[in-house]
Image (cartoon, rainbow, N blue to C red; front, side, top):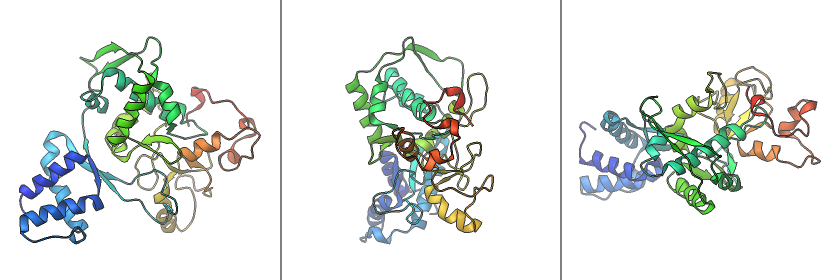
Length: 327
């Protein structure tokens, strides 16, 4: 489009009201805008991806001075029954995200410091407790989430822009009631921060992964003493954060692939080998809730997939010490 006009403003307003949408969800919105501007009825099916891309580009130009950007990502959650992510790629999600300020500070406009501290405990559980060297879950069950309603004794929460270490206010953190924690989880799902799988696992939505990307890396890939960690993993094909997919059989290797990236990647590579170390790709070493499910099997139950690649000393082990979690 040659200039930013009322049609662009209407699209941006609709986007800001939703925060995230797919191309299919944008089609009826653009069809209504085209109908109003042209005077003829436009069917949603007539709206092309090229037209949608032009509106997204125009919107990004308009919002960039305000540290906002429309970004896109493919969802990583388990596909609906009957669909295979390797043959039926999920619909790309576009989200309006803040590009600069501390994401937890942004949430302070909606949630109290105690609720933000609860969210931080959820993220810690996903990316520390449920993300070990041998079991990269990066999710948690709803029961585990609700049990985090109680703040640790003496806990304090820093509220401020994570990019500046000065002028940061620190306050004592109070526990939430279980009902408050349950309500907040529901709100986080409604607002596009959390998603729940059919098996009841909570994980971050694409919008959250896009907006929290920098914060997640700075928070979980480096400890307070400056020690580098590798808690936040990236897909070797698309380079986005991976929370659901598969991993190399070598526990020291950084090779990871989203389910929806594997088919094209291996076809282009002409071999099912790890993109990092070149070893044969196992196909049964998982990232996400499948890893948690495999790790949670009874000790006397047959263990295939992940445990098949563990050393003899790993069999029947207790939950790992945090110091042994990292690669």
